[in-house]
Length: 254
Image 1 (tube, rainbow, N blue to C red):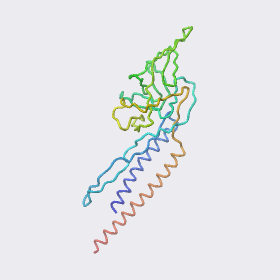
Image 2 (cartoon, one colour):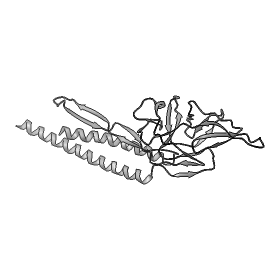
Image 3 (spheres, one colour):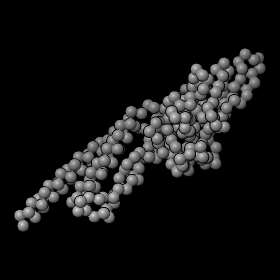
Image 4 (cartoon, rainbow, N blue to C red):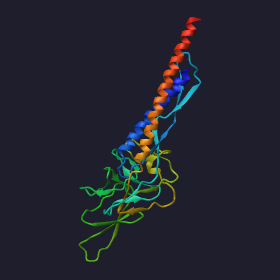
């Protein structure tokens, strides 16, 4: 009976994590480029307790893990620096600690210092390393390969010059983990700089953004399922506890 109680309580712990994830997804229904994360069951605990067998091992869900790259809806905009990343592509940015990470959020802007950033406030990474700096006085155009060209509007015959290139990677064959800040990193490497991705090129479409891949009805359905499952497991724990107490009482009588 203790095994049943343990399994039910660890399952409740996993449900709590799922519930937190669903609440997080609901809060990001309108976030540009937001991606869901699969719940991972990847931590094994050994059960060692008084008068228990040390050979018992149970796996429980301990964290949110792999990123679901299912595309979100395409949103048309008037900003030439807004990009929709096609396929399984991801774009490099620098997180708050200055470390390289990846994202699908493509609402790009040039800040007061001339640094290219996305809507989350992360500095966009250039393909050659480092940040991308753009002159606000120039006109900028981006190609489908993520190459940024600049031209001087004061010139009679504008000549476009390549000034930067986005760091784009194809994650078609790479598992990505979602970090606490909502960015992505390769699951099998601690060094995002080593992430080369698949050989196929990544393309972007300008004047467009990717909406959140979360669907409200899916989230609501899963939250209802979690709540019902929680009630069932609580009742199981109560019934097993009552059975254990009854068994102990019988043993004492005998």
